[in-house]
Length: 284
Length: 119
Image (tube, rainbow over all chains, first blue to last red; front, side):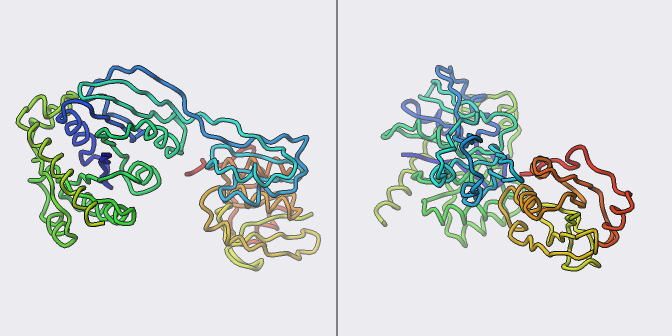
């Protein structure tokens, strides 16, 4: 079972929920930090890293001796990676989405694939099982191919928890798509609710069962509860705005370790997710 | 010679569009007689990425030797440079005023992009 933890707005507590949930499961869990632009789950679960590899994405290289400037490659590219400027063919590999279209249409066989360094994929072990994360290369703008590589490490049959990036664009879709449940973490503020609505709309389009965790639940206003009622979104957990939780977080400690009473609550959260996910399967 | 000017409208009295890649129109003006052709740039206005690159390639195809515009980013500049087009940034006023300024040698040519790329 794959659970992705998403939010819309950043800083609502995705990593807090993902890491505490993972550790509460005891053993046999996979925790995958797909927030590759700024991975931080490792700070809380302190994995021992065992493997590290550089991940590349394919970009075109053009053999200028073979190129006849026919423009077929430049015409097919939706991202303007290849430009013909007078008698010169230029490439902008940082814009490439690795679709392979240019290679397929080139009648001269002048284009080959080379790799663009996207960043690192690291894997290790932590107290509850396997840990995997991606670290996007500084300066790289495209995270989805690295997120896909992190997800390729998912082992079927395990409980896999994905810490997704914030937002509602390609990176978070890449992290959520095809997962069995999306746990959405929000906070009762106008910003939190605004971005939650966008994220909920995205999850609906993906057709994935989902539920809410409301973090800092005793601040802000009641709008998020009203929204949840209107949308029929189950609220699976509430975490108060508690100084002890903030202090544990700021030291890189897990709630479930510094306040063991939370462990049972996270285990209960998992069983509620399991129940909802099964109900969804039976319904479809 | 031909000069490309980014424009908000389709005639010489239109204001210079400060954007290059996503300018509404690009006018290709013949400096000998002030005749001009209108390049509709609307496809690039809505491009996902690389609007500047595409616009630069089109300016290259137009036969223009000079570009007068407001801002030009690094990828557009690189493409224009490869096409042998000189770029004058920070141009404002109407298209015809820009062309007059160019003819009288009152525009400064850039050695590099004058804005950062954006994603």
